[in-house]
Amino acid sequence: MRILLVEDDAVLREVIARSLEHAGHRVDTAGSVQDAAHLWRVQPFDAVLLDLNLPRHARAGSPMGNALTVLREARARGDRTPVLVLTARNRTEERIDGLDSGADDYLGKPFDLAEVEARLRALVRRATGTDDRARLADLELDRRARRFSVGGSPLDLPAREFEVLWELMSPPGHAVSKRELSDKLSGFDDALGDNALEAFISRLRKKLAGSGASIRTLRGIGYLLEPEA
Image 1 (tube, rainbow, N blue to C red):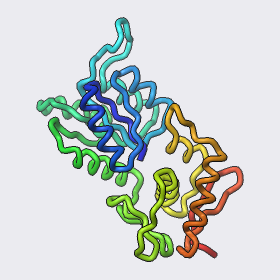
Image 2 (tube, rainbow, N blue to C red; image 1 turned 90 degrees about the vertical axis):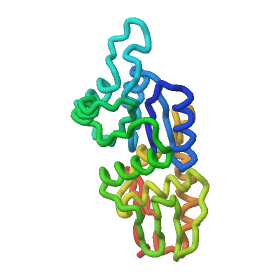
Image 3 (cartoon, helix red, strand yellow; image 1 turned 180 degrees about the vertical axis):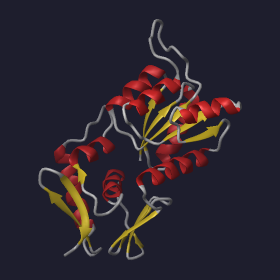
Image 4 (tube, rainbow, N blue to C red; image 1 turned 45 degrees about the horizontal axis):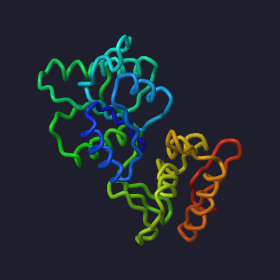
């Protein structure tokens, strides 16, 4: 998954980001309302982890409001990205305000890092209608364990090849555009070009030999993972 983490506490932000990256996710971070609003507009994410207690103004004279302003604006423009709100607040009316603003779930501070990842995974699974396990021919993806296998034997893949195959298996039989794959795999400083993406696809095709699954190029559209003819 590609996750936007919005947290103004630099130490906590780094701890959460490292935990999510260790679990295999790509994480973009923001420490202010302005940065969060900008990143959410220009980059598609699978989920957003939003600290409710962001400072109202990161810069003097900023017209931006608080964290809920960012959330409301995203929902107003039709963005349905799953949002998990983090907060140290215990007042019921504030939790209700967040949910009414468009949050999908709440998690109070302090929290367990493993629970953060599990809740995000559950939110994305619910939003996309996918299960923890996906199978196509002899190829199987266990999302909870972040593991591919072919006929029960582990399929070891470098990180980016893993992410490409993950997207093609979410769900299998669903066409994925080159732009979508590039956005999911690129950072703001390391954009993934078409040649690099095609190289990943070429290597994956070889590694899927014998699995009964193959990657088909849809000219002008992208790629499709399907059973071999």
